[in-house]
Amino acid sequence: MNLVDRAKNILLTPKQEWAVISAEPHTVQDLYTGYAMILAAIPAVASFIGLSVIGMGMFGISYHVPIAAGIAHMVVSYLLGLGSVYLLALIIDALAPNFGGEKNFMQALKVSVFSATASWLAGIFAIIPALSILSLVGLYSLYLLYTGLPILMRAPEDKAIPYTVVVIIAAIVLFVVVGVLAGLVMPSAMRGF
Image (cartoon, rainbow, N blue to C red; front, side):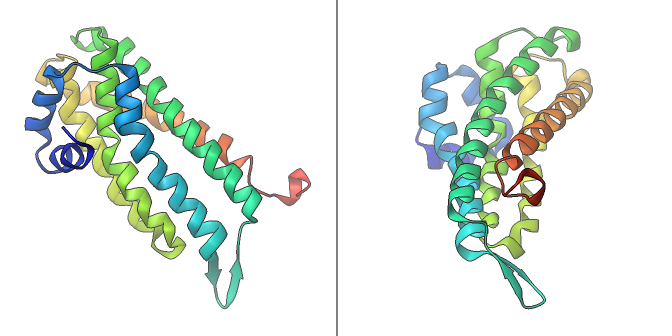
């Protein structure tokens, strides 16, 4: 299945698409090169364009992040985003037995990669900093995670909510750490920029 069809199907008919995904053979390489690396570039590139090219403005004052810092932030956030998908898959896999699921790293990686679709696509709103609040539609990824965990990790339906909540808490911690690390490459008077 091509990327556009997969993204459309996972967003519009997630339960049916998770069943299809569960049966598909995937490798780490094809999940990354055929899907994650492409979609994860959307928020990174949009953020670079929004912060460094278009700039942020309020009350008649405009600020543009310097190009070099914008590129550094784009690259770092892209790489950390790809790494965090892998780390989240490790967390999903490690937690599965605690919620009656099966340990299976490839299935966990599928959940991690495909459930991120909504947040990656919502990253396009960062292209215009004033619209970046619309990135909240990416929270739909939480629902995708909730629908995918019981199907791919074989967790019982009655444990899907607690499993999802624990994975979301772990993901929040992970993404806060990623955000802080990505933010370290941005110019700051305190760091001598």
